[in-house]
Image 1: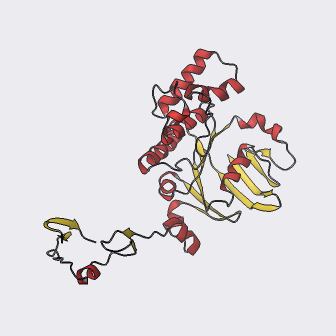
Image 2: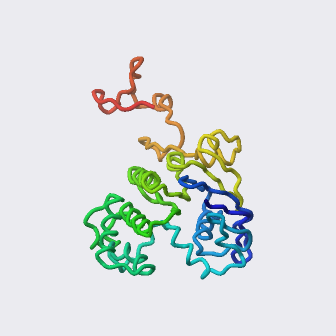
Length: 295
């Protein structure tokens, strides 16, 4: 359905996309992962026609829709087939929720207002929002803004949805709701999707295929199971992450690393009684009747 062949893109002499190639089948979800600044969003903008590649071509249903010989204005007919949820939703601050959703409809179609209002209501209902048409974007939470942005993109009934960091800055519960919406769109509308994300839990949940980009090149493409099994140390570091744990220790500054209960036992003035076998708590030295979680 969508084929990207050897795409290259420069900015001020810097090569951002070196040789990007992949294809996507109808109804599938592809996640593009990688560090910030390595060209993930640039791929989406080239597919959407917001940028023209310096090399290579993009094909949609066996028709070339973007190449260095084409102009952005040539993309107008095809752009309606693509919807995009920008990072942070990119709502117009001066417009209400309803006006934001109606904006592309009024730009591209000549529809009666009652039909536009029905599309607004149906779109908000699909993303789980009711009665927010008159609210301004500033009155919405981050998760609500993302869902309004999704309702706006879907109002055009696109065949392909592009998501740029849809769960960025959202709490885990709201992130999961956005992931469920992406899957629901696939189920209800057989929608094909490309999702740029740093969130590996989201990628594992929604992706049929994961592509990893590094320094403008795709260094991995495969299923979630295949990327977990990759022996590339860079890929493993990215998908697993490295975190330090910090614990507040009385009488000291924050201590990084593993909580060493043995060290605390040996400190003067501290009296700990170790739990019985099978117990999961230790004694609080300040209150012997109160138990604390053990490490």
